[in-house]
Length: 109
Image (tube, rainbow, N blue to C red; front, top):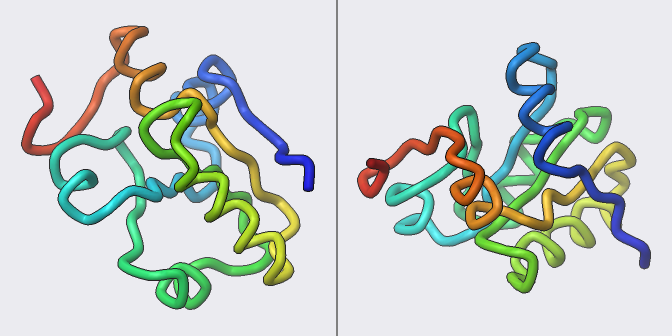
């Protein structure tokens, strides 16, 4: 399965415009509490995500970095359940932070 992606510039532009979409961090609860992109959602389980997201939502999933597979699994899980407007921000937290963009959470500077 090919994974549709979004890059940092496009994601930042969507956030800056207050576009209507769901930004979902796919890491564990403790990681979300520590650090996430402002406006992010987090779900405790796949079932919670499927219940909390509409199949027609525009969804962007991300995790820690390009090698992290959590967002890849989330992407595939959503698509396999009929979600059609899903993209992965492959760079994740590492790419966002390296650009000096704002982060929220207990570990945010």
